[in-house]
Image (tube, rainbow, N blue to C red; front, side):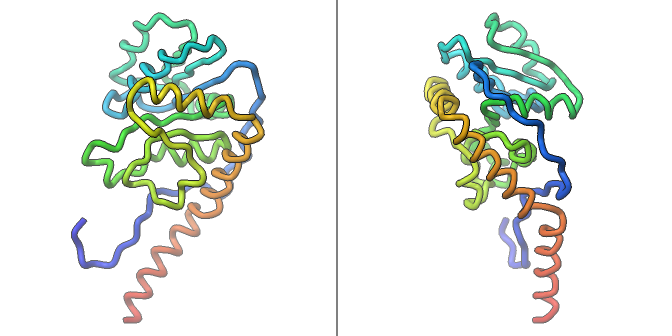
Length: 207
């Protein structure tokens, strides 16, 4: 925005007292998980089409949500795709805890993404599981060490990136997931974010 007014960028906040997530159980199966709105412009079909490029039989795509892409997903005949539909928040959290990898396929090529930080990223990070997304303009640089990024939006390249991450040792995946959780809980809670606003206001008052 073009403005000469003082401002800060506040991308979101999380509950400071958010309970410890369910323990992830390592498994031969690799669960790629998406929970949220099934809106095509947010990339859900890009994720599905990329997953279909993965040939490994021990991979699963677990989708929770509802929206315009629901019927397109139901038409796909691949037993590795598990579609749960709309679920409760508690059930969504259980699915996230089960994930080998949490994916947000929203791309950064639309105008609104310049001013967008998906709240889904915050929820994913609090889960303690690793997160893969596109490097949106609205994602601050400080998040880079806590997130994995797609390098390309082409289906085959997206598939390769998901496989590359899922094949990492569970210890490494758990570590980046836990670091991401600690980062948002410690730095993006309501107390910290409110203090940033107050600091800006008082700085202007003192001028």
